Image (tube, rainbow, N blue to C red; front, side, top):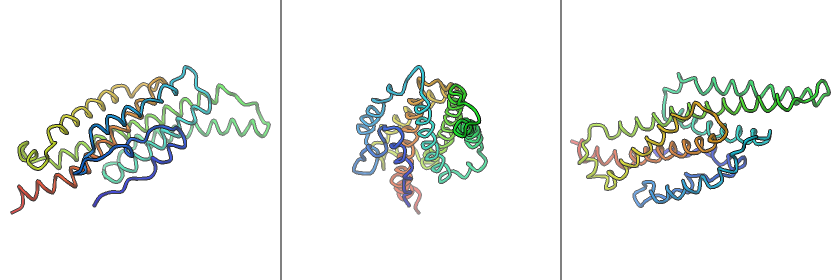
Length: 240
């Protein structure tokens, strides 16, 4: 059965108006993601990113990024729950979200104390905690995306395991092209994972967006392989 996509992604447009890739990607006649459409969507995705690269961010800009990254993390985490039972013992994202929550509570406490007149607001304290909260939110996102992307690649491999290259190509005309695309996705993800320990504001938006896009791209390919390719392989080569 085809799994329905969560509507969480729609909420992110209310926070930062970025391109929603999975909605803009066209499919070929057999249901596979279209490469030209993927390239066009990916290019459009980054057109507005430079507007969020600043030397100094305001409180509102921090909040916008926190909301946005949190919703992306939530979407991927829900998908990881659906596709991988192993997530039950994977606590890294939850720990990071708990740390982000602690920083956000500090900000809320500062605002509350200033509002009731018990103390003056401390702008530097607020920005420091928002920056820390954003760092924790990004770590939760990267850990979740790591888990889901590895899981999806494993599932794609499991679907094709046991079948030879000629057998797969006989039921999937574009297999060689797609195989090269998947290798490229793996390389892109590897580069992002090598950079993820640094939460510098200059690249945070780009890496979150890029990793999100590549992970959703992997999900599309996994669904296609599971629903379109694997049944043909089983029918042709394993049915008695």
